[in-house]
Length: 462
Image 1: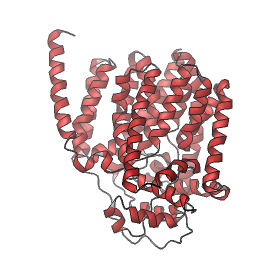
Image 2: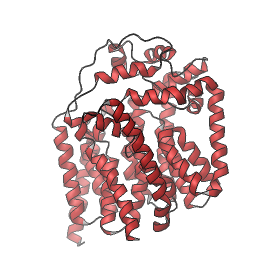
Image 3: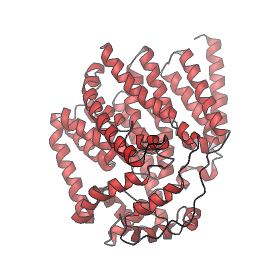
Image 4: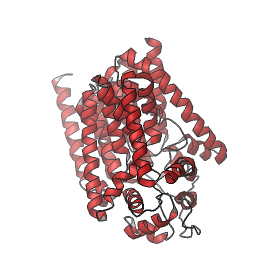
């Protein structure tokens, strides 16, 4: 690149960066640490267990959430509302401890822990050979901003996924087994990685199985065997069924139902797709690891296939595909590198959030431009991609996301009902035929499909 072009590029990036920063500092109530909208569910579940109750039942979870009322307007409009906490029992050990603090101190402590997990995830990816600055750019929105905004458990599962990859790179297999097991604190995300490590890393097996047994024992000790059995047999199916039409879902079940497929058929197809893609991830992962000489793909690629379809998938879960995409984007060359970089760009954008919060628009464009420059993507491809993403986001932002008005009358629920019964009544009210809620997910679905195609193409070439 000539000196003149380099100067123009620096001036462009400076102006774009300053404009993006100006918008970000004006986020106000949209700053993520001011929301953490899911933390109250986990906090209250921990409180319920600490008092000897069942965290999966309508009461006393409902009473606690109405008392905490982090989102006061939503709970005031829906007196019967309760948001489930469908985590495995062993997750609640930490939340029982947090619930012994007042809500605000507990929330801020949890926010700090999410920030630490975000930073450690970047460092773990750097240990696998991905440049730290590239990892930071790719993760700042989907793991930094989005996870802090939601107050979810996922950033900690993501940390253990990346730590597992780092341990595999360093050939510290027993430690990799421990981390793979702990990644199942989000079972539908971490299970693929745990199975892959169990199958393909013999020296990790004992540590993985021992850690898994310890987690199960901790969960049973916290809630009792009856409640633990209830989680596996009733809560998991009920949670998947409670959000079939939820507009924020990214699952195949949601997509099929939105296209007119009956809920039962759509849910069955979603479960089948998860099993098929689990098998595909397990078949491809060791071959990709050998072909690219990147052992961390044993953990990273099955994690990516875990979020490619399935019966239940939220925007906050999609970050699990980013480590594999980053390995491809930094290891491959030519067209496959360009396609992988495009997949990273699509996955790092929290599309629904950017659609709703216009002040994130320039920040997204700036991050994508810097990432593509850093990855040395083919210039014409980079310009086309940036132009397309910019135009797409702008087109969506011309009309803000809207959903049907919800009624405060959700029905009557007994104290012993699963919380998912009420939650399904609430999400059913949000069912929408607005095609934009389907279209906003197409870039992400395209990126996930591209990752699978890149993996197959790479193996064919080799």
